[in-house]
Image (tube, rainbow, N blue to C red; front, side):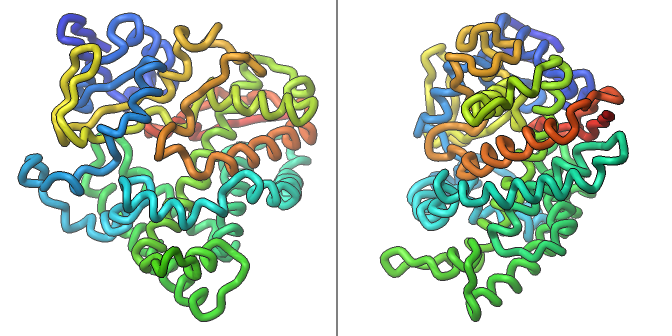
Length: 409
């Protein structure tokens, strides 16, 4: 990592294994040197301080899309790549990528299924699914936790909510992983074409499911979205497909990563799981601290919707992107006492793991419930859990999750 303190620039390769396996020492150095800096590798201004990230997440001068307020010609943006047409079609209606009024309309029509009182009804199903998953490897004495435990539970839960047949879970994971690779730093055309094929296959599957629910609605989220009406307005097929893809991808990707990150944190810090998960309140506090301590998403980008001059004198031009470093903000000692330590029940808990403002994660209540339910059962069933190999993170900096987590008991 190289600094130019006068220009406030940083050179840091996000695909350097030393960095993505443990970015926190780098974040500490960045915050001390220039917490608001121009990341040369990404060609954008980035923010590592909690106060900046928290404020900018809520700043309506920035948004997730830009072409609703400017043309490609005005911004000097390249034309869309023809070989990404199917991937781009899904992104075009994605709740994550829209701004009001389109965002408000779409979120209103799907939000009801994700409020806390609604997802709480899933607790018995998640408990049963967790026990059934552990039953498959409990007598083996060891397991690679990501593929065997962290992945199957959340994908099964979100598929059930939507009404996607369980036998498609493997394909859902495959499509999701291939699409998410598009968010890696400096993707190549091979990755792009593969992500587009995954988007095409995903869309074709959902098109069939949506058509079936139009004919015979059932008690699932796809049926709810198909039949939902607001002042005579209904979701189009494109909006339905994009929303389903987002919910399926985001509905398990972050929870998979957070499951692995939390188990790793508990074991590496030699924490007493019986104290962490002693009751409902302590469990909620432990999960919240795991979300702060090692978050599953470390970089969230937004466009400037107009020319913006920030308080620190940094000027962002309309159409330029900024990077909000959620993982760095969550370890900011200016916000959190003993920020580098896992302190369950800390009084200063205010992490930005799920974002803030209008793009606060719609699936946050579900993710919290899954973690609060599955992790205590895992440690109760396998009380002798320990690391059997050094955990390795994936080469996908934005999505901070483990490639492998080998355990024994």
